[in-house]
Amino acid sequence: MKLAAAFSLLASSVLAANRLQAVPFLGAADSLFGAGIEGAGVDRAGNIYAVDFNNDAPSAGQIAPTQELLFQSSNTESLVNGIRFNIDSSGAEEAYIADATAHQVVRLTGRDGSSGAFSQNSVFCHDDTMLQPNDIAIAPSSGRVFLSGMNWTSDSVVGDGDLWTCDSSGAAKRLGTFKRTNGVEVSPDEKTLYLSEATNAGGAVVSNVVLAFDLDASTGDISNQRVFADFAQLDNTEATDIDGMRTDENGNLYVTRNGIGQVAVFAPTGELTAYINATSIDYVANLEFGGASGTDLYIIGRCKKDETKGCADVYHGSVIGRAFRDLQSEQTEESTEPTETHAEVITSTVVVTGRCPAN
Image 1 (spheres, rainbow, N blue to C red):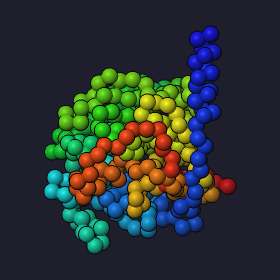
Image 2 (image 1 turned 180 degrees about the horizontal axis):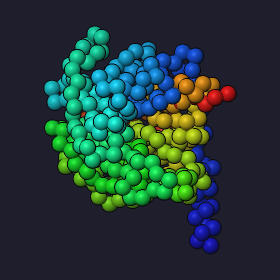
Image 3 (image 1 turned 90 degrees about the vertical axis):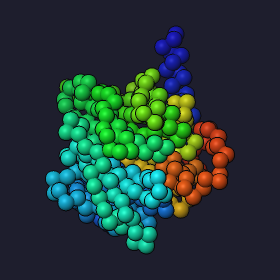
């Protein structure tokens, strides 16, 4: 009876979730991004960025509103992945880019106010024992960066995934090892850290969950590990990998499903509230809120119509993304009213990017 009741509760949650549709933004015919498009990031102006610009793994570029180069590594062996922007203690905008093969995060500084170009780049943090990093997240109050990485094996073991933090001086510290980890994100109040974990068995993907931890943003320490969402119990899509994750200013968590062209949206309580379906992408790799108001959700990934290209879809909503909100803090300090946490998530615009599948 307990099992039946639990199944009924989960089924009702899935049935009650809103079904929303993103629309095409950047198609295969016009895209300058390759199939490895990933690591969506947003700057203070609401411009959206991703990696694999010009189908070049060591590069990152702007997706919206126009396509142009942001960063080109001098190391031809680099594989840049995650991108995050931040406001430093002086109020200047900076960017952080994960370099998976070099086991480091690069910091971009000296941004020109007219062109948007950064004049300087340097290694922010590095450790040869990092698995990658793959994705990154920032806690702006302390300037801490959180890094996830993975090692793909046929049979996952603890150690195939890791979680690190680098403080504002660049000192790196491992927070834990896991099975295959990917997406990482921080809640808007910086009290919760989310991390995806997948499990392979016999070469097949058999589990995908989102873990949640209590977070001390000042020290980077995490505690009270728990399962926030388990897709085996939720909707039987445990064989579909989680990739990038983002939160909005109300604390809702947006989780990409890489292979079924979908983003799952969860309230801070863990309740599934919506599915956003991509139009141009099956292999959804990452996502970020942007646009002038910070309410457009960009979804990126490999294009359906041409798997050699990277595409982007967008969902137009009304809730501001956490990253965009945090970047406005230097300009809006007079606004001190807290945002009410609730599960009304999808009236804002979301852009989804990913690789396009072949016809």
